[in-house]
Length: 122
Image (cartoon, rainbow, N blue to C red; front, top):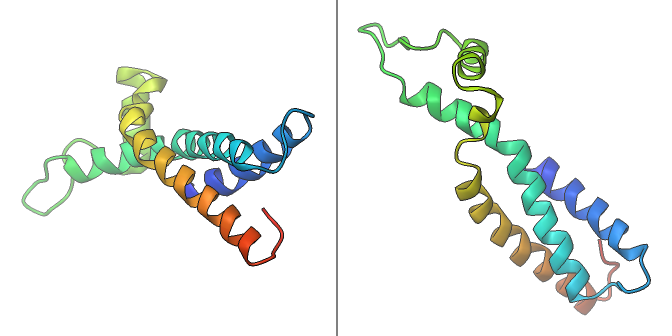
């Protein structure tokens, strides 16, 4: 989900920005598109990360089975039923603070390396 959000988010947002005459294929466009890519990656990834954390941190019985949740589907249903849909987005800000800067550095580096090597930008 991280890669799906990052790659498609960057591609779509960069193409969208380049449709406007004030944007050209430069570092400002790359920076804006990379921040959007990190945001989309965080939006797509947070529910999975939250569920994984809840499943891993639940207490277990003597046989090693989880006490709170039977499986992933049960974890989703209980979380949404008891805390609402946005409970799946707990931890969104820390995740974006990790993915946003990473996408920023990666995409700006990638675009500049491609230009230096004479290749086409993304």
